Image (cartoon, rainbow, N blue to C red; front, side, top):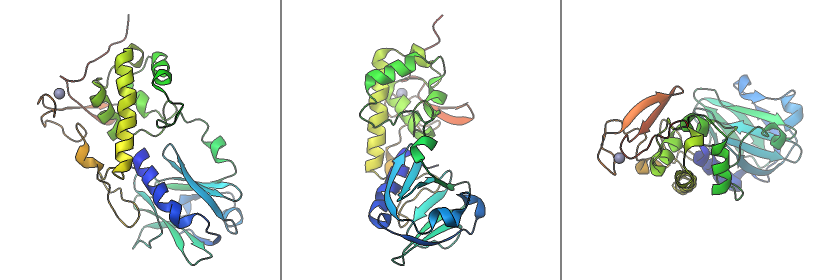
Length: 268
Ligand SMILES: [Zn+2]
């Protein structure tokens, strides 16, 4: 499943190819993929003025309104014609086309008048300037929930997914079942730093290729080489050699080192 770094990689890749294009036609081979009251009326005739990311959403700004894209499991946006599984095509005046390709077909493209209003429920961006260690510590203090599902909750913090949460908790030395409000300030600071450094490193490496994430012309991300706990069940911890534990938390596979990561229990 594409996470924040993968979505950011897609956005950066498309910045040079689709911004400035005028949409002269659209095709929707998989109808459910495009959500709009009147797709043709809303989209055709508009120009793309920008492309950006909010959480795991791609916002394609039009001169009026925007297309909000969520890739979900297997969605891809590419200017290169895929062989199959195309769900939406935007045809441009220049003769270029933007393809939404999606093998499992859970991805959606939605026309909205005001994208920020539509995404107002999302928590802060983990790489934004105003997401400081102090802000994060205050956010954790107010939550009597397990840290792993809390970090996956997009209304709490936007853009983190399963892989990066496991990696960040490992780096910060926090066991995934810890109660957020019980995490001491020092570990909270470490977790903030880990989230930012992992996301930045992964954006630099152009994402993590697990399952079938790819961007642009089927290039793969390289961050998976740096994963320290995710997908390493029973393999030795890279710090202490204790076998990595895998448990299920909120239906998600969760990896951690039982020796390096401390459990902060609910305070009585
Ligand atoms: Zn360890």
